[in-house]
Image (tube, rainbow, N blue to C red; front, side):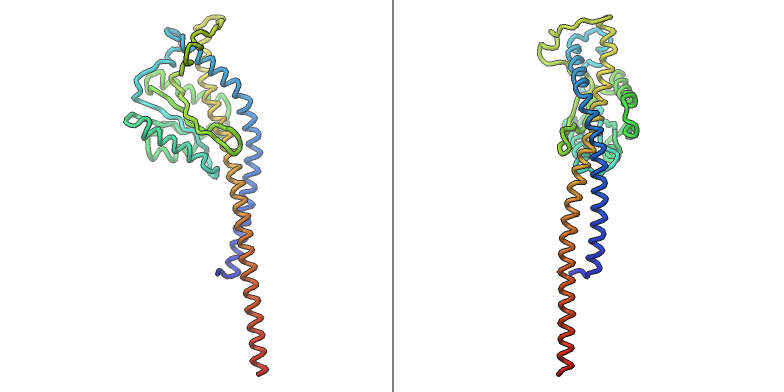
Length: 286
């Protein structure tokens, strides 16, 4: 059994850790509320814009926006992996890295697969296993639509110029503070609406279909990427809050166990001292 000093040091260490994890939990909870409100507010707009884009994609032949709907033989793939810049958020980053590796080794095995990392964790992991063409981790320092739009424009240019035949986004979709869903979405080419619903949708174009499509497609793609990053951002804080809550509970349980061990060891030491005193007194009397 460890001596009393060692147990006291461990109790102090665990208590300090518990204070840190508890503080991180409260910080993440505060950030989560703002991030959750942001993604919840923009989802209906982003989903409707994507629906309009998919409806229009069925009739893009010869239009100015058709370059983003062109299906080519898939030989070169770019995967946009969205993680966080920091750890201590449970399996949040691990799930994205596993899915990215799955795409690299299984889904697109034998093809050229490059990555764009949004988040330091993705960049640090993927650059050891594949080619990371760009690290956009700085976007989380100032997460605005304009900053994300620049990344989306770069992706659209790479697809339009034929550098890649397909671009996918891998990210965590926010469901609630305890649940994040790993999503793999096709960014480019645009996925047309399945069935006849899209082609039969009745739209009136003003001033013209060509001008509307020319503006709608880039805006929709930028919004799609912004929504994915916003989803990941909210998921990160939810995952970190949950992880720190569990860590705090575990630290409290360990601290209670150590205190019990300390009290037992202290009681045993006192008992031994009493026995030694009694034994010494009896020896003097004899």
